[in-house]
Image 1: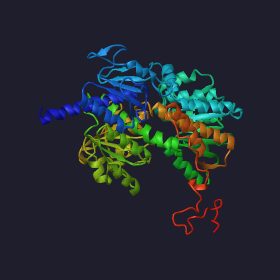
Image 2: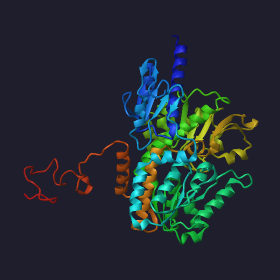
Image 3: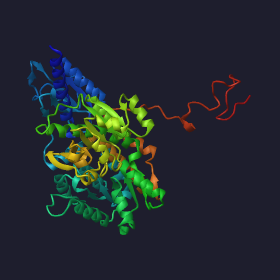
Image 4: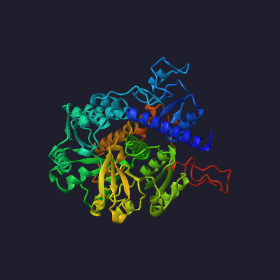
Length: 556
């Protein structure tokens, strides 16, 4: 085999592996990291390639035939059938250890089974089955009579997981209302959720051909505040800020809020610093059970896979050869940026990080990536991902520095993280070339180069895909419920508060048990600071034979 033939074979193998992993995640909006997987493929090169990619994503490998979350085979075959004479115990995958979700068999031929139902009701039920930690926390909330009838407004991307979460809140005895923006709403899910008479839905259930999306969103946001929630579960602190700035009547009823995003905690902290925050807010985003999983792993996986899914689906407009061998520039190396870099690299991308904080840039080097300033880091990138949550991270000047044909996307994100408004002012022209893909071309006097912007510059994982995987949102929603309980039970003063460490541990323990893990039963140290022995016991004591009395100075 010639070198060129070997390269072609390697590229084809890499693309097949990538597509199989993406199909596994997409089949049920599932998480690869932490999942149990088996790889039973005929070709050893492909088997090793797939197993290594899964390991780098944090999957736990098991032997073929074991009960797993994902069983990868050459062809996704019916139970009891054989492939090349070898019987595959694919039925074992139906005994998945992860919550109540069935295992998924994924074939490199593109086949996947089982597939969740296509109806909105089926998709919500599937999500609910994969959220055991949320269900446990909701059960605890419902057992406390103080929460009965509490009015809770939920402002989140409205898709199956959020609908399941809203129903669990209602099951716990809360009165529930849900708000979601036009660009962040699955209309079929909104319609199905509205059938539940316990839940008020302030989100579009069908396209509005007359009113602009911004007007629809403003009307719905005002309506949920007029519904008079006592507590808010907010995303981006948009409702918190709206209530403070324009809806004073809502403030008379509001007693607290839980904010789940980095982009939302930042303005809330600014409000507190300016003495403008008039209610207690739990910074759910800062909890370890949120940031270390939702931001880092869930958003990392879902954004990288969504980018690849969109580009692969647009292959008629632009040939797609896979992530492997491409150069990705990740702007920002906080938890989201680290996650994007991790999953892109696991699929074979070369990653360069553009970061203003020298500590985070140094961390990127130690994670095996390059760290460069934007002029060099961006100019040679095939894919540029903004992971900052900062307005105009990619301004017109930065976009103009990109090479012709570069792909631009936002991970997580806020409005206008890519400065499309500036591009319009500078007479760039845009046209849709495929679903979720727009070509922005500079005017001729600026060289006429073009870039491909995904999902109109919105967060690519929730705008062009289903958002973060179920297992990650199970943790995030359970953390939100712990925050709601903390707000209602302790009634903290106005300001920004952390979720208690005890609540973090409670949420993590529920998720750990559901995923088949265990924590060491050894008790924590009872000493202040966690020291293993009295502070007076140290290496250089002058009287080594003496025993200290209690924790004080030794008696000599």
